[in-house]
Amino acid sequence: MRPLSQRARSVPTSGIRTIMELAARLPDVIHLEVGEPDAVTPEPIIQAAVTAARAGFTKYTATAGLTSLREALVQKIRLRNDLRATVEQVVATPGSVFALASAVLAIIDQGDEALIPDPGWPNYASMLTLAGASIVPYPVMRETGYQPDLAALAGLITPRTKLLVINSPANPTGAVFPPETVRALVELAARHDLYLIADEVYEEFVYEGEHVPAARFDSDGRVVSVFGFSKSYAMTGWRLGYALASPQIAGMMARLAEPFVSCPSSLSQKAAEAALAGSQDPVVQMRESYRTRRDVVVDILGSQGLLAAVPHGAFYALVDLSRVSTDSMQLARQLLEEQRVATAPGETFGRLGTGLVRISFAAERSLLGEGCRRIVRFVGSNARAGRPVDKSPLC
Ligand SMILES: Cc1ncc(COP(=O)(O)O)c(C=O)c1O
Image (cartoon, rainbow, N blue to C red; front, top):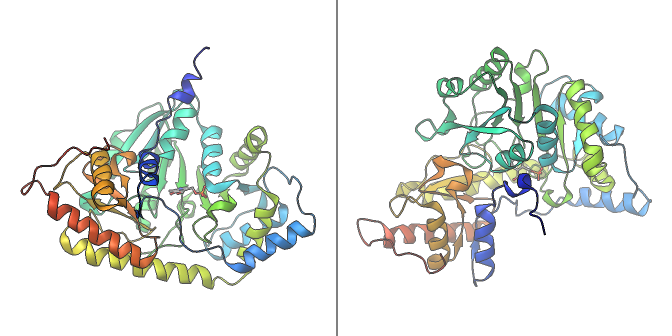
């Protein structure tokens, strides 16, 4: 048989999946590798979907989502993000990942260059590769708490650059960009006539500083802002996200949804309406609970000099295991095998992830504490000055 599509095969396999598969074969593993809230979706949201299903709300909806949901999103964007928008500027999507992917498809032609953060969420590279983009990673610097280096970023722009992707609060670094940085990034995009996709799915989880939407500084409709329900309302399995963009880009994104997904799930849209209309206390509780867990991570790992940076947002921390090895896949495998802690290898997030692993602190608190203590033990028994690193038999 002839080979499968070259384009499909060019998408890298995820290092996180490799660790998950290895972890599934071992007993008593503490799972810190996946970015999944441990909370269950709040009950009123679940009830709204059940009621909608019983009422027969089980059909296709408009491609861009229900008008009632989009109107509610316009309200949310006004009240929580302090931005004016019309319904035509809002598209609901199956997960924010499809908001990102359809924005990429709307913007990118074969060979266009796209700037993505390093370290950054690996799906940017995958979806851009599928769209035919040439990927140019830009450094977010550990020395500055993983803030973008604007001069370095500007130096990477060529006449072929068409898109800049930014992510704050950030996965995997936990960085929150201050308002002046977000403004400077939007201005840089405008100066070089780039589109800018701002991935803001962790907007609700900021522990220090504030989240400023990139669209606040957009004067001519070049910014696509992506938000979601997965993280804010512990709704990862419901698959619902949304984007705010110019009417032209939003219209194109909805058009692109047609051949791929038809529309977001009708029941998830009803659940999302309930999430927006109901009490926001669960969001506040989740934020405070993640903050406490972030503090556990800082106490245990930060005090041992093992944190690459203190996370100010999202629910991830990069752990510096370079005292043991620089090969992050080797580190994640060995940590799993010796201490039964599953983590995401740093190089999954880019070249600057060497010597690092990412943990998610959305895990249950006592497990998180125990996982962190095991990481400390791992470094204690394997640090290069002490014992040389053995090759893991799992390799
Ligand atoms: C930075 C970032 N953007 C987008 C997403 C996708 O979220 P969703 O579940 O809404 O598709 C994730 C999920 O982990 C993420 O970490």
